[in-house]
Length: 286
Ligand code: OGA
Ligand code: MN
Image 1 (cartoon, rainbow, N blue to C red):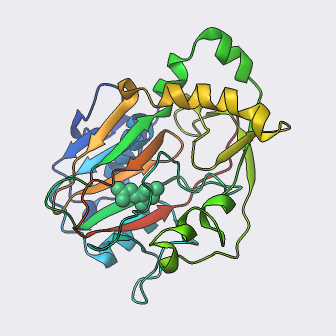
Image 2: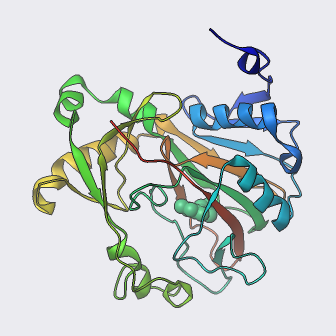
Image 3: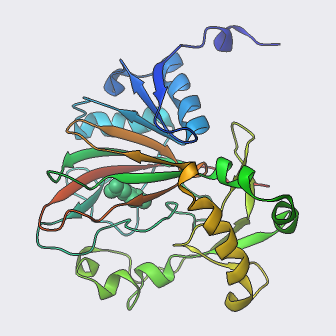
């Protein structure tokens, strides 16, 4: 029986960003979104993986309040924070820097036992051109696997860690952004099903990613790679992707269970700065 709350569901004015992934939502002021409207936005993010909102003029305080209304904030352990707003992680590339944050396909925080639900990313400084963010829909990627592969991964789990990325001597430490990152002494690791059910939509999603998923549980790295690479290859198929082209005032909200993302590093010589608040998630299950 559907009771009043759902029957009164708000109709959002929206259009797809790409055939399989993403949605643009119009006529919403996120600073004021709450109640039924926020529920409708949540459903759109869970289904499409990422929602784009234009012309938001969202202040840092409004950004934080929106995340709190959404359901809670996870503080990122690695990115620089500001003293004024420790809830906000600063995703910055200076004009003179080479390496960017998030410049490879990944899912934020998949190395946590209870991975973050998603993020609210606000554009603060944009390069004149480039700096788009790609998203991949992991429900579409799962659906596109052949039946043999679906059977092969049924019931498997995978191990995720960020140690090779953020630790002393890790991937970022060897680049020109290493010095700005925190948490080099942290150790992370979590095991999740290779295929999870979205906690809200129930859709089956491929939950492995090339940045943080290092092994199939119980297998060596070498024995894990062929299967992981096969799964990654399907998710890399542009059929499942969407591209967010940022403009001043653009805000995106994405779901880390439904998507991968990849920040393109194609604007050398220009600065780019984004403000990210990471949204609390829940334990994942097959
Ligand atoms: C992130 C990230 C993407 C971007 O904040 O998690 O990957 O486009 N950023 O900056
Ligand atoms: Mn990211």
